[in-house]
Length: 173
Image (cartoon, rainbow, N blue to C red):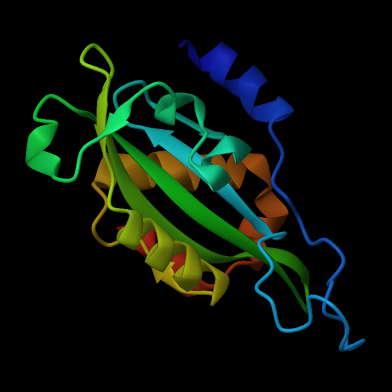
């Protein structure tokens, strides 16, 4: 995909940014439940130098996850192409919205053999950590982290500016 196509695609994809809190103190149905309304999955494709939002990943239905059989071990997908699903949670601070939690989860897809590998436990743990405002990207390769940083900055420079130094440092190493 050319960078022009990726830029155009990026503009049509949108983060889910700060929706109404369904648990606003009414104590009724849904009180105390976890809300994923402020979370968006960003797909990082280091081979194609691409990053984009695919909301289908929230339910393991992103374009890259479709029509493959998941294998229990990484070794079962030796020719798998590396992708990262990065769980990005947005919160509102004193200065406005910012990228609060960012956690990258590995995905390997062998499209010709219709096989894939991902650790569901890792994905669930990383989603939870992102919701709690944690930054979990130290296991990602430098190229993928740069693609993620560039995407977040390009997507909304103000949210990037409002983000913590921890996130900026983690993606600038």
